[in-house]
Image 1 (cartoon, helix red, strand yellow):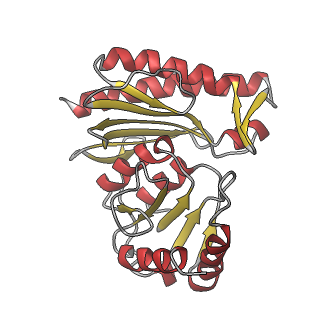
Image 2: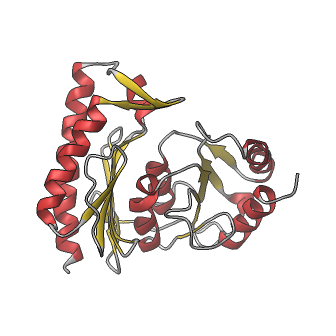
Length: 266
């Protein structure tokens, strides 16, 4: 499989989706929305973009299935699956606040092989493929060189449906406020991971996520020299609904802090 060629095809598909989103935002500053669950929203734009992506990506690799946020396709591939978030940061989009992004990954046997993230606020397209490097608008990117959390800027996301771990999660916020250069929360996990990949952030962590939130970011980060883990330091981060993303140099310390706090006994 020619991953570089396929990645370039996916970039064009994702950019077309981005153009559609921009046009809809300009036409309606406050899009109509539905509430899928408490504080969990979807708009007609999410659904339309996902259908566009499913149709176009199906033409690129017909044997692949789909894992898509809005459930547009129930097709599952035995080996390959497209993992799609048509609009990561829907709440931001509804309110006209950036960032929000289109995120597409191709997974082979549940391991991301290529990923594309288009953040619409800055019009930045992050992408990468296995053993091919990571890029931002055509230029190679690398993770930061900060070696400790003390000199790291860290990003996170706040849970909006699963509050069962909130007490311990709040302890992590306190820890990073006291022991790092700062903590940021922008509302788009795909963008957060891409920003770790290009060195703007030194790390990111969140729980309550889905595969479509993180799949593209995982491969881009890996190709940029970073690492991912679940809260135990293991490899259950794609489907396990929790993730730590680091620049690699601060990885062991980062995992140790999150594991120690999130798994501590009450």
